[in-house]
Image 1 (cartoon, helix red, strand yellow):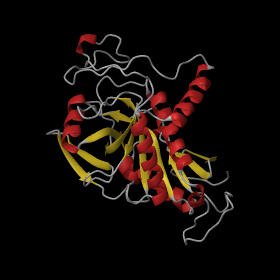
Image 2 (tube, rainbow, N blue to C red):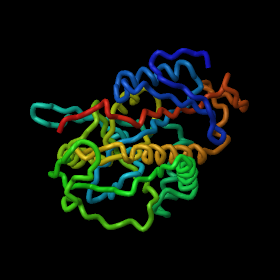
Image 3 (cartoon, one colour):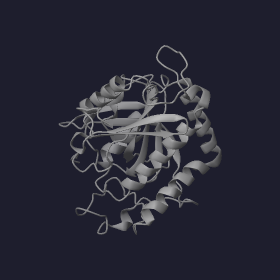
Image 4 (cartoon, rainbow, N blue to C red):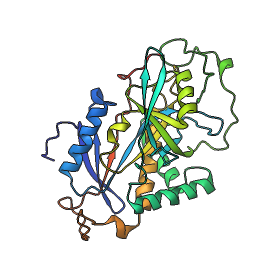
Amino acid sequence: MSQKFSAIDQVILGGIGVYNIVIARLPLSRCGDTQAIAALEREMFSTFPAIRFSLAVGIGGGVPRSSADIRLGDVVVSQLTGKSGGVIRYDLDKTSSRVYSHHWTGSLSEIPEYLSNALATLQTDHGLRGLMGRQIAKNMADIQRKISTFGKSLRPEEDCLFQAEYEHIAPGSCANCDRSKRVIRPEREQDEPVIHYGSIASGDQVMKNSQLRDHIGQELGVLCVDVGTTGLMGIFPCLVIRGICDYADSHANKAWQQYAAAAAAAYAKELLLMVPQPQARGINKSGDSNTTPEWSGLRESTLSAPPTDLDELQMSP
């Protein structure tokens, strides 16, 4: 592909089902940069004017609540709730630790009706099954097999949620952390990720503070926190899909990042496969039909996938 992009690290063209897709990512140094993400989105839609909607697929920190049993590897999908359009921007006053929130409305309601219908169908299906659904489970199994050929298991063994007041002991893994400080949770019958639908809080730094996480969860009612997503809001219809890689606390590390990213991608794939073919093929800006799925005239969706290594973005407790 000869096209040069100033804001984008890598662009990949491909297809899922009847959809032609464009996968774009920022350089690691710009990951979480709200302005860079907004520039990426504008550049993508300028270069590929037939894009109909975007999926922001990546990882985030879980916000466990009594009403939502969030575990590592689960997936959170942005959903219109109350005054929130599925994504809530939060800003911090570092001197007082006060949270300032700004609500974006309509981000989910603005996605095309055929995508909204597919989302509702998946939500109903997963609600009945309680887990990810057969197709996502198959996608995850395929990824697991490919990873295992290199002698590495994709899914980590341990999922520890520590009490909010208990801080991480040393850099790296939680090998030296006091296991008696864990939050005791009932074991799940199966290891498959669970899909959650609700609001996502987005800031400009990676959160690694459990007390702040709980404060935001209680004040804003969110299930997940991430970095930079609000850069996509207001530019084009966007659905946010986040795999949970940590609990946004001082114990966060890289162990679950690959698995969480794979879970989010597996959900995105099933969602696109659920979109009915007549609506998915060849609808241009003027509403005319075009059933020839060639790259010169049909590029219908974007999966914006940020890098999974977020170590360069830190937030002090």
